[in-house]
Length: 112
Image (cartoon, rainbow, N blue to C red):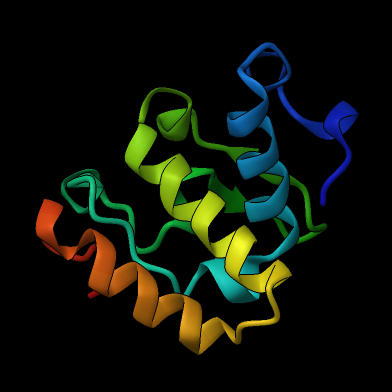
């Protein structure tokens, strides 16, 4: 988990479930870039659930955070489910299959 003091003020002021989702997504790009989001955010250029939290990473590794997930419960629910599944020992592939099966009813995947 990325330390909370490295998060933007608006994330630090958010509910705990949102805070932990940002912390997890920021610290686990290899997992989260392969997890789709189903909230419709592909329309704003997001290409994974990771994009709901992090908009860019510079050449020194500094993250620029996206504020989208601050107001989107689907994004946060997806991340919280991935966190739970990983704690239960599931693989990233198992987590992806669960997310696809659970959230595809909400719309299209944002992974091209």
